[in-house]
Amino acid sequence: MTKRRVPDSEEDPIDVEVVRDGRLRTRVHWEWSGSRVRIRIPRNAPKREVERLVAEIVEEVKQKRARVRARADADLEAKARQINRSYFDGEIEWHSIRWVSNMRKRLGSCTVGGPTDGDIRISDRIRSWPDWVVEYVVAHELTHRKHSNHSKEFWAYLGRYPKAERARGFIMGMAHQLGEDADSLL
Image 1 (tube, rainbow, N blue to C red):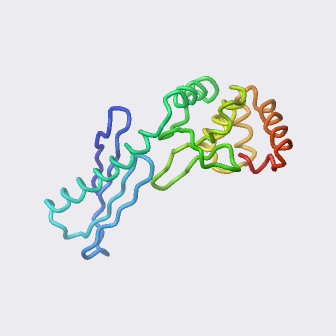
Image 2 (image 1 turned 120 degrees about the vertical axis):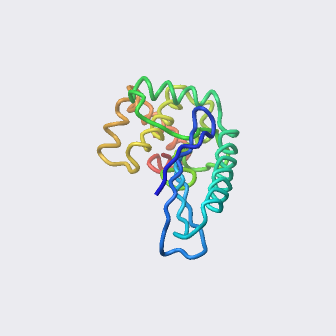
Image 3 (image 1 turned 90 degrees about the horizontal axis):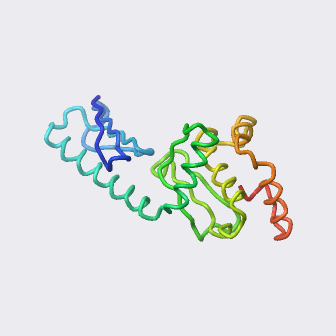
């Protein structure tokens, strides 16, 4: 097994792990999760072939990550970084955050695991809501990077955001006005 770090950009390196697998004969299997790529290759694959395959796979991952970053919103990113520093001690990492127009029910979502690991999407229908509510929705999605479900630990961690209860009240009021279930929004 070999591990290496491939610079994608100065702030976004890709960690590559190459594993020689005796069960594989001709095929190469790889998986991408966040900034990590794990590549399984046949045990007897020639070194030159391995280098070529690794380069192709890393290039594909770089292109996909660049497409996601290109859609990211700089203002929303700055807001998320400020929330992370102020309330979560800078503990949380994510790949991208952006406004999306295709969320009809939920206010935000955060992908945990898989190729889109760390991609946070915020519904653009809340852009006109008070800033402290938008910040709460961002804080909520950031908290999913630490706790994937809505456990007691999740709510305790999210409670670091000082206007959490106030924002939840606002969201409940908006949900009531729209005839929606507030719990299904987040």
